[in-house]
Image (cartoon, rainbow, N blue to C red):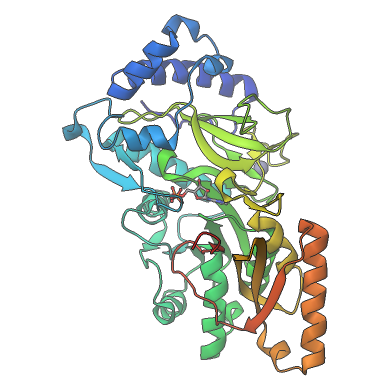
Length: 431
Ligand code: ADP
Ligand code: ZN
């Protein structure tokens, strides 16, 4: 299968024609796996029932549980000897799931990442530093091979070791970096400590993704580094990065519909939501031979952005991920997403680069505590000023989440940090 010719600017009818063909191929291929042989037979769907892309609705969903229950080889369509790589999810929400790739799968993936980076303005001749963790995490090798395919000088820096990161950024005149947003903010304080202005480097583009982040965080990253920062979405079950990516317009991520068939459904009824409304993203691989996955419930919440992008690409755009269905905090009967808290915090100039939400139980009462790092220049202020700030944050949060949180102002750089995805919520209620 060679999936990636000339389709970046294809019109809708062409994209849908490709989807129809690839959906049928994918389902045919999938029936070679133990899992889909069973689940497709049970659903009673025949290949002849699949005429167009909308016939995807006839097929059953696949869940993370299905992947776990059929660990390790139950989704493979070929002998394991045909596989050349495996990756695993980071295990943010439980035990990891493993995905296998053939060489063709890896080639298609690298093409998709190269296409995504090119869309964001990265070119041959750029020097590219990948500051995401390598190993099983797909943000390492996944982005790496795409960058090489594009022709960038690619530095596999990996995560952490901030001083060395900064040295490489300087010494090799790095122009493009891939970085997890929370780490980008943390790195900025290392720059500050060693007295280097991030804007004095050569960086012009940052690719940020792998974790939910608000537009306020993106804005901060752009201001600190003097770059354009492009949102990158992917998940290991769908290869990893290269599923959806922002173009230069920065108004939503084009989801590569020649490679993935996307639906957005109500997370409980699993019925499609009206166009433009938020729901759970469902994805089907259209170009994977070793381990196709059909109607995968990503648990990520987003919406299709209506209308056509001025860049001329017709692959539909998804909005930034507002959270995962299983991220939702239920407190005193109110549903809250961490992203709502982040949006408020990051819009307050005194607030620094990190925060942590803790859920506690006092007697029979649930309580939210929000620990907020305050910028150095404000932390030295007198008590009264700090109290006023605390009150301001409490009020703004209450207006957004309808709950009075306890707000602790803490010193810059004092909350725990991760080299990988940030931990934003600690639930102490059942401890
Ligand atoms: P895990 O599910 O264990 O975190 P992955 O490493 O495969 O494993 O991560 C994929 C998940 O990361 C996505 O399902 C999504 O929740 C999150 N994610 C990835 N990219 C983004 C992004 N740009 N914005 C928000 N969330 C993202
Ligand atoms: Zn666009």
